[in-house]
Image (cartoon, rainbow, N blue to C red):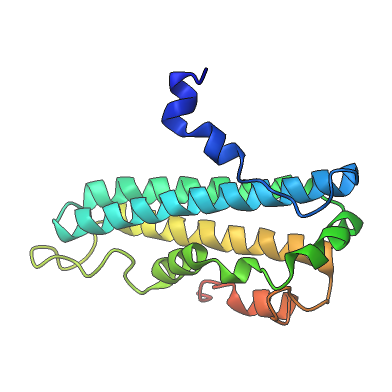
Length: 194
C-alpha cells in the first residue's frame, strides 16, 4: 500500500524513470550509468525550480517590489549553488566508467537541455528581471547584489562543470557534436575586469 508521502510525491513514477541501457548483469557499469542518469534527472528538476523562481523574481520586479524580487533571486542562487555541488556526485564516476557508458548516450548531451539553456540565457541578460519600474529608475542595492550573486553562482557552476568534463573526456569532442572543452570554455560568462 502506497503511503500518502509516496502518493503526494508520485515516488513510484519518479523512481521508475532511472532506466540504464546497460544490462543488469554488468553491475559496475549499470551502477555508473544509474548514477549518471540520477544526477542529470535531479539536476533538471532543480533547474526547473530555478526557472519557476526566476519567473517569480520577474513578476515581483514588474510589480515594483524589488525586495521580494531579491528574495526570489537569492533562492535561484541557492539552487545554482546546489547544482554546482550536485556535480560533485559525478566526481565519484571514474573516467573509464564514464567511457564505458558514453556510447550508450548516442548523441544525447547536456548541451541539449532546454531548461539549462533558458536559465543561463535569462541570467546572462543585461537585466535579468526586466527594466526598473517607472517609479524606480534603478534597481535597489539589495536587488543589484542578488543579481550579482546569482551571476557569480552560474560562473561557479560552469567552471565546476568544465573541470568535470575535462576529467571525464579530456580533449575528446562532446557527445552532442560540440568541440567539448573548447565549447564549454567559450560559454563561461566571466565578469568584465575592473
